[in-house]
Amino acid sequence: MDVTARTDKGDVINIGKKEFREIGVDLEGNERLGAWQIKEIIDLSLPPGKTTKERFVAEFQEGTKNVDIEVTLTYHQTPAYQSVVHKVSRKVNFDR
Amino acid sequence: MRATKIIGLMMVNFFLLVPVLAVGEFNTIDELEKAYGDKTCRTCHEKTHTEWQKSLHSQSVVHSLGGFRNFIVFGLKRDWKKPVNRENLMRCMHCHAPLLENASDSLAAEIGELAMSAFDGNEAAKKELSRLNVNCIVCHNTVAEVEINLRGAPKPGVYYGPSGKPSPAHGTEKSKAITSAAFCSRCHWLYTPPDGDTLYCNTLYGSYQDAYKATGGAETCQDCHMRSKGRGHTFPGAYVPEMVKEGIGIDLQATGVRVQPGKGVPTAIITIGLTNNAGHRIPDG
Image 1 (cartoon, each protein chain N blue to C red):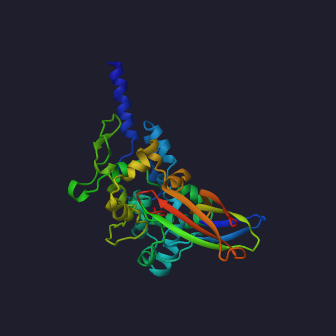
Image 2: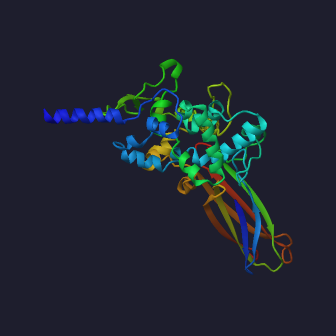
Image 3: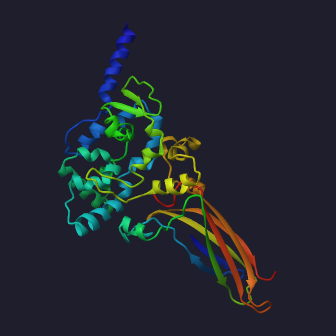
Protein backbone atom coordinates (compact mmCIF):
# COMPACT_ATOMS: atom_id res chain seq x y z
CA MET A 1 0.00 0.00 0.00
CA ASP A 2 1.50 3.32 -1.13
CA VAL A 3 0.41 6.70 0.19
CA THR A 4 1.27 9.87 -1.74
CA ALA A 5 0.25 13.51 -1.61
CA ARG A 6 -0.03 16.01 -4.46
CA THR A 7 0.22 19.56 -3.16
CA ASP A 8 -1.54 22.61 -4.58
CA LYS A 9 1.86 23.55 -6.01
CA GLY A 10 1.97 20.33 -8.04
CA ASP A 11 4.61 18.52 -6.01
CA VAL A 12 4.11 14.78 -5.49
CA ILE A 13 5.38 13.57 -2.14
CA ASN A 14 5.71 9.97 -0.97
CA ILE A 15 4.21 9.79 2.48
CA GLY A 16 4.75 6.15 3.24
CA LYS A 17 4.13 2.53 2.36
CA LYS A 18 3.08 -0.61 4.13
CA GLU A 19 3.51 -4.22 3.02
CA PHE A 20 1.18 -7.04 3.99
CA ARG A 21 3.12 -9.90 2.56
CA GLU A 22 3.03 -13.62 2.35
CA ILE A 23 5.27 -15.37 4.73
CA GLY A 24 8.69 -16.52 3.64
CA VAL A 25 9.35 -14.35 0.60
CA ASP A 26 9.67 -10.64 -0.07
CA LEU A 27 7.85 -8.70 -2.78
CA GLU A 28 10.55 -9.63 -5.28
CA GLY A 29 9.99 -13.32 -4.60
CA ASN A 30 13.32 -13.80 -2.80
CA GLU A 31 13.44 -16.17 0.12
CA ARG A 32 13.75 -14.43 3.46
CA LEU A 33 13.14 -17.29 5.86
CA GLY A 34 11.72 -20.79 5.62
CA ALA A 35 7.92 -20.79 5.76
CA TRP A 36 7.71 -22.30 9.24
CA GLN A 37 10.46 -20.03 10.57
CA ILE A 38 8.66 -16.81 9.69
CA LYS A 39 5.37 -18.20 10.98
CA GLU A 40 7.00 -18.67 14.34
CA ILE A 41 7.92 -14.99 14.35
CA ILE A 42 5.15 -12.86 12.89
CA ASP A 43 2.05 -12.87 10.74
CA LEU A 44 2.25 -10.03 8.24
CA SER A 45 -1.04 -10.69 6.48
CA LEU A 46 -4.50 -9.13 6.82
CA PRO A 47 -6.59 -11.27 9.19
CA PRO A 48 -10.10 -12.29 8.08
CA GLY A 49 -13.13 -10.39 9.31
CA LYS A 50 -11.06 -7.58 10.74
CA THR A 51 -10.13 -4.06 9.77
CA THR A 52 -6.44 -3.31 9.91
CA LYS A 53 -5.76 0.40 10.39
CA GLU A 54 -2.64 2.23 9.37
CA ARG A 55 -2.02 5.86 10.29
CA PHE A 56 0.35 8.31 8.63
CA VAL A 57 1.15 11.86 9.72
CA ALA A 58 2.64 14.02 6.98
CA GLU A 59 3.99 17.56 7.25
CA PHE A 60 4.08 19.96 4.30
CA GLN A 61 5.86 23.19 3.52
CA GLU A 62 4.51 26.42 4.97
CA GLY A 63 2.18 28.03 2.46
CA THR A 64 0.61 24.76 1.34
CA LYS A 65 -3.12 25.35 1.31
CA ASN A 66 -4.34 21.87 0.38
CA VAL A 67 -3.17 18.46 -0.80
CA ASP A 68 -4.72 15.47 -2.50
CA ILE A 69 -3.94 12.32 -0.58
CA GLU A 70 -3.91 9.20 -2.73
CA VAL A 71 -3.74 5.62 -1.50
CA THR A 72 -2.92 2.83 -3.92
CA LEU A 73 -3.34 -0.75 -2.80
CA THR A 74 -1.44 -3.10 -5.09
CA TYR A 75 -1.49 -6.88 -5.00
CA HIS A 76 1.86 -8.40 -5.92
CA GLN A 77 0.86 -11.77 -7.34
CA THR A 78 4.37 -12.46 -8.61
CA PRO A 79 7.35 -10.15 -9.04
CA ALA A 80 6.34 -9.84 -12.70
CA TYR A 81 2.60 -9.47 -12.22
CA GLN A 82 0.96 -6.88 -10.03
CA SER A 83 -2.55 -5.51 -10.03
CA VAL A 84 -4.00 -2.38 -8.46
CA VAL A 85 -6.81 -3.40 -6.14
CA HIS A 86 -7.89 0.04 -4.94
CA LYS A 87 -6.93 3.61 -5.69
CA VAL A 88 -8.70 6.16 -3.51
CA SER A 89 -8.06 9.84 -2.85
CA ARG A 90 -9.21 12.61 -0.57
CA LYS A 91 -8.57 16.34 -0.58
CA VAL A 92 -7.18 17.81 2.63
CA ASN A 93 -7.52 21.53 3.28
CA PHE A 94 -5.27 23.31 5.79
CA ASP A 95 -7.08 26.63 5.84
CA ARG A 96 -10.44 25.61 7.17
CA MET B 1 -31.36 -52.46 -32.48
CA ARG B 2 -28.87 -50.60 -34.67
CA ALA B 3 -29.09 -47.59 -32.33
CA THR B 4 -28.40 -49.81 -29.33
CA LYS B 5 -25.30 -51.19 -31.04
CA ILE B 6 -24.03 -47.69 -31.80
CA ILE B 7 -24.59 -46.56 -28.21
CA GLY B 8 -22.85 -49.73 -27.05
CA LEU B 9 -19.83 -48.97 -29.23
CA MET B 10 -19.76 -45.37 -28.05
CA MET B 11 -19.72 -46.55 -24.45
CA VAL B 12 -16.86 -48.91 -25.13
CA ASN B 13 -14.95 -46.09 -26.76
CA PHE B 14 -15.62 -43.79 -23.86
CA PHE B 15 -14.39 -46.35 -21.38
CA LEU B 16 -11.20 -46.70 -23.37
CA LEU B 17 -10.72 -42.94 -23.61
CA VAL B 18 -11.34 -41.92 -20.04
CA PRO B 19 -8.13 -41.95 -18.00
CA VAL B 20 -8.00 -44.43 -15.18
CA LEU B 21 -5.57 -44.62 -12.32
CA ALA B 22 -2.84 -46.68 -13.80
CA VAL B 23 -0.40 -48.35 -11.47
CA GLY B 24 3.25 -48.41 -12.36
CA GLU B 25 6.28 -46.28 -12.82
CA PHE B 26 6.40 -43.67 -15.55
CA ASN B 27 9.61 -42.52 -17.18
CA THR B 28 8.34 -39.63 -19.28
CA ILE B 29 5.84 -36.81 -18.97
CA ASP B 30 4.21 -38.21 -22.11
CA GLU B 31 3.47 -41.46 -20.30
CA LEU B 32 2.07 -39.62 -17.30
CA GLU B 33 -0.11 -37.44 -19.47
CA LYS B 34 -1.40 -40.46 -21.36
CA ALA B 35 -2.40 -42.16 -18.12
CA TYR B 36 -3.77 -39.18 -16.23
CA GLY B 37 -4.27 -36.38 -18.73
CA ASP B 38 -7.28 -34.09 -18.80
CA LYS B 39 -7.89 -33.89 -22.54
CA THR B 40 -10.27 -36.83 -22.75
CA CYS B 41 -12.41 -35.36 -19.98
CA ARG B 42 -13.03 -32.41 -22.25
CA THR B 43 -14.93 -34.65 -24.67
CA CYS B 44 -17.98 -34.53 -22.42
CA HIS B 45 -17.13 -31.78 -19.92
CA GLU B 46 -16.05 -29.00 -22.26
CA LYS B 47 -17.46 -26.10 -20.22
CA THR B 48 -15.96 -27.35 -16.99
CA HIS B 49 -12.65 -28.09 -18.68
CA THR B 50 -12.53 -24.59 -20.18
CA GLU B 51 -13.17 -23.12 -16.75
CA TRP B 52 -10.45 -25.25 -15.23
CA GLN B 53 -7.97 -24.16 -17.89
CA LYS B 54 -8.38 -20.60 -16.62
CA SER B 55 -7.64 -21.67 -13.06
CA LEU B 56 -4.32 -21.84 -11.27
CA HIS B 57 -5.00 -25.51 -10.64
CA SER B 58 -4.19 -25.99 -14.33
CA GLN B 59 -0.87 -24.18 -13.76
CA SER B 60 -0.04 -25.58 -10.36
CA VAL B 61 3.55 -26.38 -11.34
CA VAL B 62 4.50 -23.56 -13.71
CA HIS B 63 2.93 -20.95 -11.45
CA SER B 64 5.06 -22.00 -8.48
CA LEU B 65 8.50 -22.20 -10.08
CA GLY B 66 9.98 -19.76 -7.57
CA GLY B 67 8.90 -21.97 -4.70
CA PHE B 68 10.32 -25.10 -6.32
CA ARG B 69 13.57 -23.29 -7.02
CA ASN B 70 13.79 -22.18 -3.39
CA PHE B 71 12.99 -25.70 -2.20
CA ILE B 72 15.59 -27.32 -4.45
CA VAL B 73 18.38 -24.72 -4.24
CA PHE B 74 18.08 -23.53 -0.64
CA GLY B 75 16.40 -26.60 0.83
CA LEU B 76 17.45 -29.89 -0.73
CA LYS B 77 20.87 -28.85 -2.05
CA ARG B 78 22.09 -26.23 0.42
CA ASP B 79 20.50 -26.94 3.79
CA TRP B 80 19.54 -30.59 3.76
CA LYS B 81 22.10 -32.07 1.31
CA LYS B 82 19.42 -34.32 -0.16
CA PRO B 83 19.03 -35.59 -3.73
CA VAL B 84 16.38 -34.29 -6.11
CA ASN B 85 14.51 -37.57 -6.37
CA ARG B 86 10.86 -38.56 -6.33
CA GLU B 87 10.64 -39.01 -2.58
CA ASN B 88 11.95 -35.54 -1.87
CA LEU B 89 10.25 -33.79 -4.77
CA MET B 90 6.90 -35.25 -3.73
CA ARG B 91 7.00 -33.04 -0.66
CA CYS B 92 5.99 -30.30 -3.09
CA MET B 93 4.38 -32.37 -5.78
CA HIS B 94 1.89 -34.21 -3.61
CA CYS B 95 -0.06 -30.96 -3.88
CA HIS B 96 1.28 -29.37 -7.05
CA ALA B 97 1.26 -32.49 -9.26
CA PRO B 98 0.08 -35.49 -7.22
CA LEU B 99 0.27 -37.83 -10.19
CA LEU B 100 4.05 -37.68 -10.07
CA GLU B 101 3.76 -40.21 -7.28
CA ASN B 102 4.00 -42.79 -10.03
CA ALA B 103 7.02 -41.18 -11.68
CA SER B 104 10.39 -42.90 -11.73
CA ASP B 105 13.27 -41.31 -9.82
CA SER B 106 14.88 -40.37 -13.13
CA LEU B 107 11.73 -38.59 -14.28
CA ALA B 108 11.49 -36.81 -10.93
CA ALA B 109 15.10 -35.65 -11.25
CA GLU B 110 14.38 -34.49 -14.80
CA ILE B 111 11.38 -32.53 -13.57
CA GLY B 112 13.52 -30.92 -10.87
CA GLU B 113 15.98 -29.80 -13.56
CA LEU B 114 13.14 -28.57 -15.76
CA ALA B 115 11.76 -26.51 -12.87
CA MET B 116 15.13 -24.84 -12.29
CA SER B 117 15.55 -24.19 -16.00
CA ALA B 118 12.02 -22.85 -16.37
CA PHE B 119 12.58 -20.54 -13.41
CA ASP B 120 15.60 -19.15 -15.25
CA GLY B 121 13.39 -18.36 -18.23
CA ASN B 122 13.63 -21.45 -20.43
CA GLU B 123 10.27 -21.37 -22.21
CA ALA B 124 10.62 -24.92 -23.59
CA ALA B 125 11.08 -26.25 -20.06
CA LYS B 126 8.09 -24.25 -18.89
CA LYS B 127 5.95 -25.62 -21.70
CA GLU B 128 6.95 -29.16 -20.79
CA LEU B 129 6.13 -28.60 -17.12
CA SER B 130 2.79 -27.01 -17.98
CA ARG B 131 1.52 -30.53 -18.66
CA LEU B 132 1.79 -31.28 -14.95
CA ASN B 133 -0.95 -29.87 -12.78
CA VAL B 134 -3.92 -30.52 -10.52
CA ASN B 135 -6.35 -31.79 -13.11
CA CYS B 136 -9.73 -33.54 -13.16
CA ILE B 137 -8.50 -36.93 -12.01
CA VAL B 138 -6.71 -35.46 -9.00
CA CYS B 139 -9.72 -33.95 -7.24
CA HIS B 140 -12.31 -36.33 -8.63
CA ASN B 141 -10.38 -39.50 -7.92
CA THR B 142 -6.87 -39.42 -6.47
CA VAL B 143 -7.67 -37.25 -3.45
CA ALA B 144 -11.46 -37.55 -3.54
CA GLU B 145 -11.65 -39.28 -0.19
CA VAL B 146 -10.56 -37.61 3.03
CA GLU B 147 -10.86 -40.80 5.08
CA ILE B 148 -8.83 -43.16 2.94
CA ASN B 149 -7.74 -45.37 5.81
CA LEU B 150 -11.35 -45.83 6.91
CA ARG B 151 -13.27 -45.83 3.65
CA GLY B 152 -10.57 -47.21 1.40
CA ALA B 153 -8.75 -45.57 -1.47
CA PRO B 154 -10.75 -44.16 -4.39
CA LYS B 155 -11.63 -46.83 -6.93
CA PRO B 156 -9.74 -46.76 -10.23
CA GLY B 157 -11.83 -45.42 -13.10
CA VAL B 158 -14.51 -44.01 -10.78
CA TYR B 159 -15.04 -40.27 -10.67
CA TYR B 160 -16.28 -38.76 -7.41
CA GLY B 161 -18.44 -35.67 -7.37
CA PRO B 162 -21.11 -33.87 -5.36
CA SER B 163 -24.00 -35.55 -7.20
CA GLY B 164 -22.76 -39.01 -8.13
CA LYS B 165 -24.90 -38.73 -11.26
CA PRO B 166 -24.35 -41.81 -13.46
CA SER B 167 -22.28 -41.39 -16.59
CA PRO B 168 -22.08 -43.62 -19.65
CA ALA B 169 -18.37 -42.89 -19.89
CA HIS B 170 -17.07 -43.89 -16.48
CA GLY B 171 -18.05 -44.97 -13.00
CA THR B 172 -19.31 -42.29 -10.64
CA GLU B 173 -19.78 -42.02 -6.93
CA LYS B 174 -21.21 -39.35 -4.72
CA SER B 175 -18.68 -37.69 -2.46
CA LYS B 176 -19.68 -35.62 0.50
CA ALA B 177 -16.06 -34.73 1.17
CA ILE B 178 -15.60 -32.96 -2.15
CA THR B 179 -18.08 -30.24 -1.15
CA SER B 180 -16.36 -29.49 2.15
CA ALA B 181 -13.65 -26.97 3.05
CA ALA B 182 -11.75 -29.84 4.65
CA PHE B 183 -11.31 -31.29 1.16
CA CYS B 184 -9.34 -28.21 0.09
CA SER B 185 -7.48 -28.05 3.38
CA ARG B 186 -5.24 -30.95 2.54
CA CYS B 187 -3.18 -28.72 0.28
CA HIS B 188 -4.14 -25.29 1.57
CA TRP B 189 -3.16 -26.09 5.14
CA LEU B 190 -0.48 -27.94 7.01
CA TYR B 191 0.43 -30.87 4.85
CA THR B 192 1.60 -34.30 5.88
CA PRO B 193 3.47 -36.14 3.11
CA PRO B 194 3.79 -39.92 3.22
CA ASP B 195 7.07 -39.72 5.15
CA GLY B 196 5.14 -38.29 8.11
CA ASP B 197 6.73 -34.85 8.33
CA THR B 198 4.49 -31.84 8.73
CA LEU B 199 5.04 -29.23 6.04
CA TYR B 200 4.34 -25.57 6.62
CA CYS B 201 3.83 -24.09 3.21
CA ASN B 202 0.63 -22.17 2.62
CA THR B 203 -1.63 -22.35 5.66
CA LEU B 204 -4.68 -20.47 4.48
CA TYR B 205 -7.05 -23.03 5.99
CA GLY B 206 -5.58 -22.39 9.44
CA SER B 207 -6.89 -18.83 9.42
CA TYR B 208 -10.17 -20.06 7.89
CA GLN B 209 -10.74 -22.35 10.86
CA ASP B 210 -9.29 -20.27 13.65
CA ALA B 211 -10.14 -16.71 12.63
CA TYR B 212 -13.19 -17.09 10.34
CA LYS B 213 -15.17 -20.15 11.41
CA ALA B 214 -14.34 -19.53 15.04
CA THR B 215 -15.91 -16.09 14.83
CA GLY B 216 -19.13 -17.16 13.12
CA GLY B 217 -18.09 -17.49 9.47
CA ALA B 218 -20.31 -19.99 7.71
CA GLU B 219 -19.16 -20.23 4.11
CA THR B 220 -16.93 -22.89 2.63
CA CYS B 221 -14.12 -22.51 0.09
CA GLN B 222 -16.49 -23.83 -2.58
CA ASP B 223 -19.17 -21.24 -1.69
CA CYS B 224 -16.97 -18.28 -2.61
CA HIS B 225 -14.52 -19.77 -5.10
CA MET B 226 -16.96 -21.98 -7.06
CA ARG B 227 -20.67 -21.44 -6.42
CA SER B 228 -20.70 -17.65 -6.08
CA LYS B 229 -21.28 -15.78 -9.37
CA GLY B 230 -21.06 -19.02 -11.35
CA ARG B 231 -17.30 -19.21 -10.87
CA GLY B 232 -17.34 -22.97 -11.26
CA HIS B 233 -14.01 -24.61 -11.89
CA THR B 234 -12.16 -21.35 -12.54
CA PHE B 235 -11.45 -21.26 -8.77
CA PRO B 236 -10.58 -17.56 -8.89
CA GLY B 237 -8.12 -16.39 -6.28
CA ALA B 238 -5.64 -13.62 -5.73
CA TYR B 239 -4.62 -13.51 -9.38
CA VAL B 240 -8.09 -12.28 -10.35
CA PRO B 241 -8.28 -8.56 -9.50
CA GLU B 242 -12.06 -8.69 -9.07
CA MET B 243 -11.65 -11.37 -6.42
CA VAL B 244 -9.07 -9.38 -4.46
CA LYS B 245 -11.24 -6.26 -4.69
CA GLU B 246 -14.13 -8.26 -3.30
CA GLY B 247 -11.91 -9.58 -0.54
CA ILE B 248 -10.38 -6.32 0.65
CA GLY B 249 -12.34 -3.17 1.45
CA ILE B 250 -10.63 0.18 1.87
CA ASP B 251 -11.54 3.30 3.82
CA LEU B 252 -9.50 6.49 3.67
CA GLN B 253 -9.92 9.22 6.25
CA ALA B 254 -7.75 12.33 6.16
CA THR B 255 -7.83 15.67 7.86
CA GLY B 256 -5.61 18.74 7.80
CA VAL B 257 -4.36 20.62 10.84
CA ARG B 258 -1.86 23.31 11.70
CA VAL B 259 0.00 22.59 14.87
CA GLN B 260 0.12 26.32 15.68
CA PRO B 261 -2.86 28.07 14.05
CA GLY B 262 -1.89 30.84 11.67
CA LYS B 263 1.76 29.97 11.37
CA GLY B 264 1.95 26.26 12.10
CA VAL B 265 3.15 23.49 9.85
CA PRO B 266 0.43 22.16 7.50
CA THR B 267 -0.01 18.59 8.67
CA ALA B 268 -2.19 15.81 7.24
CA ILE B 269 -3.40 13.01 9.48
CA ILE B 270 -4.25 10.04 7.34
CA THR B 271 -5.96 6.90 8.55
CA ILE B 272 -6.47 3.97 6.20
CA GLY B 273 -8.60 0.99 7.10
CA LEU B 274 -8.21 -2.25 5.16
CA THR B 275 -11.00 -4.71 5.84
CA ASN B 276 -10.46 -8.33 4.93
CA ASN B 277 -13.88 -9.62 3.85
CA ALA B 278 -12.57 -13.05 2.87
CA GLY B 279 -12.83 -16.17 4.97
CA HIS B 280 -9.06 -16.40 5.37
CA ARG B 281 -6.08 -14.16 5.69
CA ILE B 282 -4.69 -12.25 2.73
CA PRO B 283 -2.28 -12.88 1.22
CA ASP B 284 -1.79 -16.60 1.50
CA GLY B 285 -2.61 -19.60 -0.63
